[in-house]
Every structure is written in C-alpha cells, then in structure tokens.
Length: 499
Ligand SMILES: Cc1cc2nc3c(=O)[nH]c(=O)nc-3n(C[C@H](O)[C@H](O)[C@H](O)COP(=O)(O)OP(=O)(O)OC[C@H]3O[C@@H](n4cnc5c(N)ncnc54)[C@H](O)[C@@H]3O)c2cc1C
Figure 1 (cartoon, protein in one colour):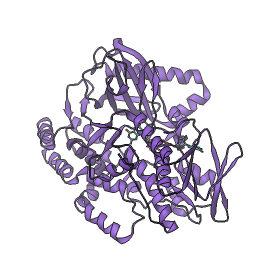
Figure 2: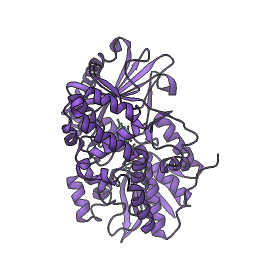
Figure 3: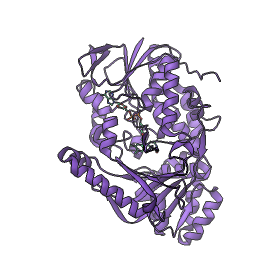
Figure 4: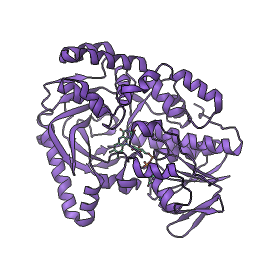
C-alpha cells in the first residue's frame, strides 16, 4: 500500500516511521527543502538559534512517551536533562523556583502569600494527586477513538485518580481561575503556567511536572530530535519528496487516489496522511467536499494557537541571574504587534549542547503576538518590517537588563523570529504554531482523524488532535497509522530498533 504524507514536521515524520513499521510504502512531501517543520534550528555566527520545541515530559522508563521515543529511535541515542524553571518579577525582587519539590514550593508560596494559604493548599493537592506525567501521558498516548472497550476501560481506570481535577472549577480558563489569588505575584505566576484560555487543570499539570522533576530538555534540541526521526525513517526505507508543495488531494468517487503537486505532477497513493494545516487540507486541498456541521463549527468557532515572537540573543559570556527556564512577569505590558504581554518565557543556554561557541551564551525570549500585524507589515513594507524586528530586539534587551545586568554590553547578536517567519515554515492558518488553542472544549472534544464520506485519508498533527507538546505531535502520527491499520483490518505493529 502506498502512503503519501503531507508535511515533514514532527507529526509527519512520526507517521512516516509507523507507516514503514507497518509495511506500507511511505513518501513524505514537504514544501521545504529540509525535514523538521517548526522543529528547526539554524546557525548565526556560531550561535545555534533554536526557538521552537525542546521540552519533553514523562520520558522515564515505563511511560508511553518513553516507548514512543524508543520506537522512533530518539532514545537511547539522545539524552535529556532535567530543566530548572523559575518565575520572577522583572526586577528579580520576588522569585520562586517551581522545579522545587512540592513541599518546598508549598512552604515558599505560603510564606510569600499568607492570604492565599487555602488556595495554595488546593493547588498543591491537585499537583500531588495529578501525577502529571501520568495524566498527560494518558491523554496524549491513548487514541480515544481506537481500541474498543478494553482500552477505554483501562483509560478510565488510569484516569480515576485525576478525574476530580478534570471537572468543576479546574476546567475554568487559567486567566479566570487564577484571579482567585489575592497576591498579585502568585496570581500572575499561576496564570502564566499555561495559555490563559487553557483550563486551570493544565496549568496544575505543568506545575506537577515541574515539582516532580519530570520536565526535561532534549540535550541537542530540535536538531537532535529531528535527526533521530529522519535516521529512523530512512533506515526503515522511507522516502522524501522535498521542495514539493501539495496543492490538491486527488479523489475518485469516495476514495483517495493521490496528491497533485504545485508543478502539476500527480503522485499516486492509496492512502494519504495529512500532517499540515488542517483548514488548508479540508477547505482547499479537498475543496470543502468532505465536511459535516461539526467540522464547520470547529473551524468557525475554535481559536488557532497564538503566534509567537522569539528573540534570540548571543552573548560574549553565559549570562547568570536566571534559571535555565524563567517566566518573567513584566511590570508593564509589553506589546508584540497589537498583543500585550504580561509575561515572557526566557531560556538561557551556555556552550554545552552547541547553543553557543565555547565560553559564550545564548538567551532566548518568547512572547505572544498576532498574525495580522506581522503579515501585513511584511507584505506592505519589507523595510518597516525589519525595523520593527530591530525595535522589538532592542526592547527585549532593555527589559531583560535588570535581571541580566550587563546584557546589552555582552550582546554580540540579536535574531528576531516573527509569526511571519514561522508561517513561511509551516503555512499554519493565521500563523498558528501548533494547531488549535488548547481550550477546555478543544481538549475534551471528539477526535476527528478522518473526514466524512472519504476513504483512505487520515489526519495527524495538532489540527487533527489538539496536541499536548512535542510528544503529543508525534503521538498523532502514530495514531493516524494505528487508525489506518484498524480500518484495513490489520494488526498495528510498532517496533523499537535494536540497540
Ligand atoms: C517559537 C516557537 C516555540 C515553540 N515552542 C514549543 C514548545 O516549547 N513546546 C512545544 O511542544 N511546542 C512548541 N512549539 C510548537 C511546535 O513547534 C509545533 O507544535 C510542532 O513542531 C508541530 O509539528 P507538526 O509536524 O505538527 O507541524 P509543523 O512543524 O508545522 O510542520 C508542518 C510541515 O508541513 C509542511 N507543509 C505545510 N503545508 C504544505 C503543503 N501544502 N505542501 C507541502 N508541505 C506542506 C510545512 O512545510 C512543514 O514542514 C513552538 C513553536 C514556535 C514557532
């Protein structure tokens, strides 16, 4: 069976590996000249810019994520290091390390915010009961639409410990839920644990991962991860069609027959797995022919994930003053385009892992932004677009100076990546970097992996399944193949390479 996959990002690469493990001929098409999609890094004057995904959780033996990463050849070849994560105000006067053991964190938060003792206890109870690795592992790894009664019973059994935290007030958007806290620092710290529109339980799950030492960074970043996936795919006999823009999914009757590329070439295939923008697939490549009310409603009402600006700063020495991952709560809103930011995520690296030349450092700040602003600016006036990027770089340097004294003098290079830069890579609707926004509704809704009335098409990636993190994307690739095998009446095979 010949399977054509659209998109060579993490989701498409994973789908390709599992398609090959299940004896399908696989070819992955991508408009770009390299695989990896948004998981990419690039070099500038010896610094490695790597603003995309680098976190992984639940990587320990015994988790579904560990099994996935072994099957995909990431483990044992690539190492991970636990991440230390802190939250600080902009002047560094109030700060807390949230990758502390839960009891220590609880004590520290109670000391900082005595008026919020009851709420702190509730939050810490949630973190403790959630076994976040377990909860998120179950949510990401078990395809709710596959597996029949025994799987759903075993999921229910696993979920029983967390269920009370997946309902009631915990499902409120984080921005609202955190308003309960009286202490402004604590309120903003809680609110920054996940996207403001995501349910509070997801923020608690993040906190739980942090306090239990389950939050890790891949030692060689996006490059290492993508390199492992590509090696695994090629060693399984997979093929690529790079620099190939897919324009149409060719359908005869109710069956997929292949792809039409932008140069007019038809690539025949009995199966197509999409791992690119879902709206583009449904509304353009299939010309709205395979839709139902629910799919239309989601595309009308659900919000795409928020585009991001990232500012990478190469420095002449590693900067001290912040933990390797730090959420900085800003004194006054910082506008990126027309989006105000009340916090920014700052990642710091030294030369280990190849992020900076020996003795030097790299600081990368990520903030929310909006698509229209950058898209229009770039389309209207390239010079003004570049000037705005330079202004943003300067503004971030200024805002970080208090926490990282001497940063401006030590700066050798500033590289700004906008939602427009990310869109050129992934062609995501309105510059969305990661499919749908992780709202309570999106996370609790039925998975749509196939389209009504169409045989042979399977959807992967965070547009098909609101995906939880880096491994979440790779799980969607695995599950698309699992569903394909299920529909073909074949047993699904997943094999880890030897060694
Ligand atoms: C600045 C930034 C920071 C991020 N940080 C994190 C993080 O810390 N943790 C995290 O989990 N995630 C993070 N993300 C999101 C993460 O990068 C994505 O969720 C993930 O990489 C998506 O992988 P994917 O394979 O589904 O899609 P993508 O990486 O978007 O790949 C889609 C691929 O499809 C190709 N394509 C699209 N349309 C076509 C077409 N018509 N024809 C041919 N090819 C096509 C594109 O070229 C692209 O290669 C971040 C993203 C950004 C931009």
